[in-house]
Length: 463
Image (cartoon, rainbow, N blue to C red; front, side):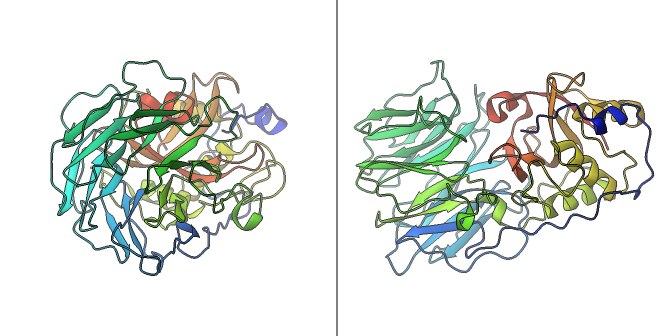
């Protein structure tokens, strides 16, 4: 989070006046994307990474599923992006995607059939899409949900599946048996993922604090609930024998429970570099149970060309492309140092730098509330219930008045018809304060930002 402190630079910029486009005092920032074998996936133990994706993807990668029809030497997996694109890697077959369609809401998860000849994807709104030999057994699409869908798991015979929402509600379809849920129970932290037993008679839910909820025959082997974590848990995966499970933290840590063996993680940073912290979104276990993959959505190249918005100006396209070009770990090893301004909290310095590169005549602001004030006077500010457009700034907190009320800012990269957005944010986690990064965030619903991001949205500022 970019918790801005009052500084001399901020005090000097309280008087809001337009700055001429291109009047940049900070040198051009040149970020380099994460470079490692496999692009956005990293392999441990017996897991292997095939040739990486190098083409720009239309939307952020949100989930992966291993191909169960595999061996130690012949492996594969599917990657799913928020626009429903599917990328078949290694020996995984391609059976179709939604990448050419305009979805109401973004895809958030993918699961494979037991024979590896098909897969399902589920969207934030509960819509389910089946491909290959995956059967469609129902969905929550078009039905009101208390909270969005965050995870999915299939039954052992492939004739059913479960969906889980962030409030812990579980929905069973086909021959999937409902064995209980946390729906209606007040949770300390939202649920972020689920995994099913190999025989289908049980499943686990995991919350962002690492709390585990076991149902049916699923055994409880431990959790990180109640243990202080540097970063939230982003996902889970179970062992093929059902005797254990893995949790993965957004900051790169892997936690093992039961008979799940530890094969390595990124808790010390990529290559042991504590300044190169990769934001992880999930974990998938190799079918032999002696390896796993970690998913880094920021490790891919993106064009952010889908979904197409009704009106995307040249300025908006430039803002999104410029912001995306900067996605990387800590850009400067100095405490709060960055290429966009002085060594201080820099989420607003980043956002105003990007706008300026696109020709927006805004000063370089260190305080997020100044972006609100500038837009209020010269362009427009929208309430948090409004529908933003790509290029708009997302202002987090409760209001523009002070550094304790206006705490962070990001830039909108994509918008879905249901209101879900993807943002690109500077001085954002996961990492130690003062060593944060430029990251891709989402997709998420702005109305649920407080539970998803830990802070609400108070306004959108137009460029």
